[in-house]
Image (cartoon, rainbow, N blue to C red; front, side, top):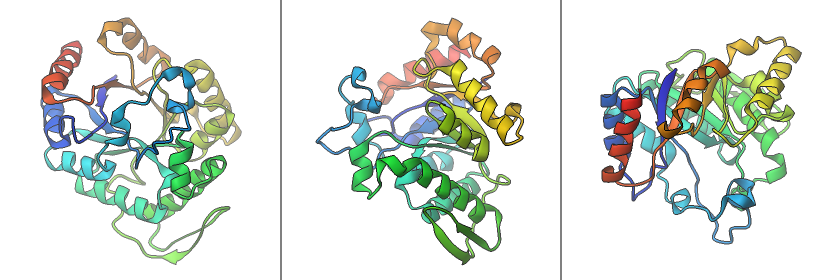
Length: 282
């Protein structure tokens, strides 16, 4: 099982270039960055949509731009895979996003993992002109358009939310047909259907969602579209840290091929000892 790490890359934390080099030097497989464009101060939506999680940490509104940070990490590494964990696809213009993904994948030598999700912050979406209730359908159309842009010399798409005329768009991703698309979040029937239709894997949050139930939904959804569930890569997102090593050791038997461990959004003096702890576990 591969081991990666995830951190909120903020202006106060260890910077992406420094962290990326430290991760590669220690043999980690991947480095993942989340994103939020901003967090409205009204705080209408509880953290993650769950009122039991408590106050939202400051790191959520201090993150660097996800793709700029990953590009900086790519520039100082050679083997480390670079993940978006996750990209809020419905909040983004899909034409520009397709170009960002393809550009980063090419410039990194084909090292991008494209983690996607629907998002949870209603007021953040509202500021982007996005209706929270429509986010799933918009994400689907955006991804399907992006796939056309990545794989076709002359791309076009007509869907419920997009009418895109035949166009040229380069660069194309280095990975073929495109970087792996990994769906984050819980997998009920609707999410499972999207995973089966247009994703290459699933990334549930460790200890937060019903993993076994999600796998059942995904297996059923794959069967409905004639897809082998074994074709999907399963990564445990924000997997339990080493003090729960028994849970980590159980992940391969659950079908996970990657564990992504959390790092605090702090300076090098705090982050590097945690990174060393994870490395000793590996």
